[in-house]
Length: 207
Length: 214
Image (cartoon, rainbow over the protein chains, first blue to last red):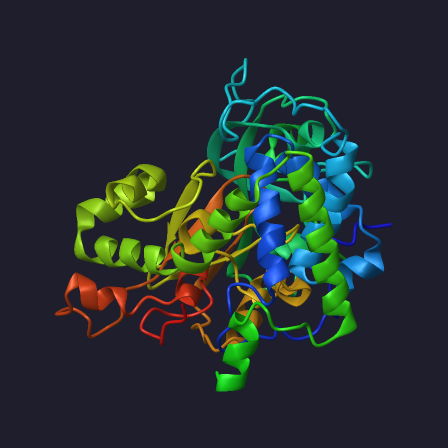
């Protein structure tokens, strides 16, 4: 079963409703929830990846019906207790280094211009590999350096830094021969999500 | 926005009008009380974060950045090469800059548009919090698959010859579009140029020169 939050390319979700003007928060509680998330992260009780995984574990029907900040609320209600934040006398985990950029103890495997294929999406736990690029070929447009790896960091398995690449996928590669020949999607993918592909390989199509 | 809406949005003592909203408010209050009691967060920290995003951090930051880039080719070069360093030059009221910003430039032949299909990542440290449509399932689902149709639906008709590049912010980089400088703005001062840059033009769903939303 696909993850409900993995929305890229999913048909049938309707029109985009754009409001002329909207307040920063629709209700006071939305601001309080946003503040709780930011403050818990700053206090090192919450890491971004565990927080996102909390959102992703919502009941799928509820996820789609919920507003953005309701999803945030649902995540911290679940994840902060899991991380021990509500346990009397507990202390937050040791402070991680600032930000997300990290040294990787090895050279990058791929270079700008390489043709790569995105691997199958890990069906278990948190990942940042969108389903719609899985199995598709793209070209590296930038090597962004080493970053905290969400797939492990979300699960208390450490930062395990990995190289991050911006990979461009042509619309026809992603959506088939009828797609826009002058459109592409660039996705930021971690090295473990990628494998080398031969650039002259057969056309990969959706049908 | 009429007066009634205005009251609804800013009178925080106003009682929520539907039970669902009341339940959410109650859950948020209960969790906040617990987190404060356990010393996880302080109320004053939450107050400060909310006030900062309500009053200080917003699309004006991005508009200033773009106006400077249009006015100063050397700044534009630095902005496209290393946005974080270039942004620091302007002393803007920005949030936590742990997440690097990447600026992508629109040209007569290339149009860029930004999305996050997996959640709703957005250059919030610079532009403030994202609008609702950006976070909505239809936008997240559709803009990667049919970007030209989505842009048309949002009022931006691109020539068929223009290449469309969608940026899906799937990791800890945040993308910001440098829109094309509007025709006829050659004589405009930097301050006047700021007025031409809307939030939506920084996301890539509108051209610069359209009325700005803050």
